[in-house]
Image 1 (cartoon, rainbow, N blue to C red):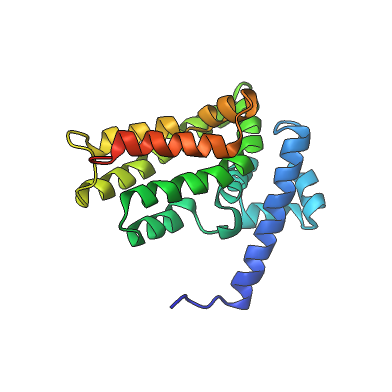
Image 2 (tube, one colour):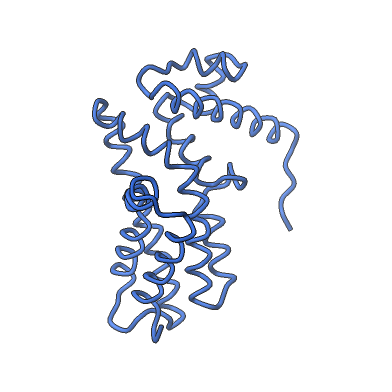
Length: 208
């Protein structure tokens, strides 16, 4: 049974969502560097100190913007938490992969503008360049859990380690791969989803 949230927790989440949504709009419209915490405060109707208390620094804001965009309606829950629940509840390895790709299909559409902000900011800001690297490493660690789940169930292709499986998932589902195929080469998201699903099943699943 889900734990019931207090009114304070509900209000805190609403405030954080307002801040993050305002930051997302301004980062995409203006870019990361020109956007100030003061502008975000005015846009979201809160004091500057409230932003520091509820979210943190400007870099922390960018992280939360990406987290919320990735999680969609599940925010502020983190992507690994709800994706792990879904994967563990699904016994069919192909459907586990379909769940992942379905999440990617929605998530990458939402995060594509944010990744563009990060890409541009990273060229000028060493802290954001580090953030870009850290997020990639975090995705790789999360995908290792998926590889381990398939291995423990006996569904992972023979000779493939969870680490190798993670690298395959990381590469095929990378935001840059999505950007190049969908945003730059004109693929529909459905075509991309079908391609990446078939590729993952062929590469990862035993006797696929």
